[in-house]
Image 1 (spheres, rainbow, N blue to C red):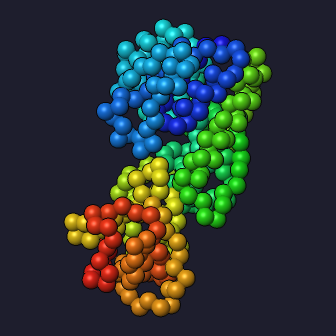
Image 2 (tube, rainbow, N blue to C red):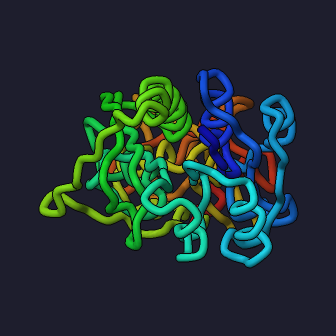
Length: 300
């Protein structure tokens, strides 16, 4: 069974590795993103070594639907095409290379959270249970039949980092049990129930801007949702900027009388900021200055 894998992130790496480990599969071609366009994926991964280990040719493209890319994929004669970790929509030319056999991975319990930025939205929406979903890509976005799903719970303090890791594990588990079924023709299709569908909008780095008038718990949730491998939440003070990747609730909140956004404590390892209700202690950040100035002015 021959496959082409299209992607540019850690989930793509997982898919290549699992395909290598599964008997009866060949991988003649991996298609990935031109390195100069790495800004499209905050979690861009170098696939050169794993592609070489698979004996696959590595093709760099700007657009998966450009004629040369379509020709090269067609020349690889794939039985299946896996589009895992790729942000561009597959056009008809690509879909027609392996009709009905183009497989995608979505980091949500489809039909919930179709669309973009599913991992941050899972945390922001306070989802208690989610899943990784392997599905058949069709003409619409994330609505094709389900090939496999792996469900798991979210912790109360789940971060984008920990949830991302759980999805890599879920993808590996599903591919281990699904690739043999695909090879022997026993893989199943389950239509999605559109009555349960929800849609997640695209997020950009500026959506991480912190509104300090919000309650501390909501600000902490935002920080957890957009931490590594994503761009992080951020605060500004004039032309200075601090990007926050980790924070906790400050238990001594009752001690601090200040306006939302005001820095009330600074030490070598953390700083505390007053919120609309409550106070947070920032423990992981990068910034223009090492820490914001205490009490002098308000972060925005």
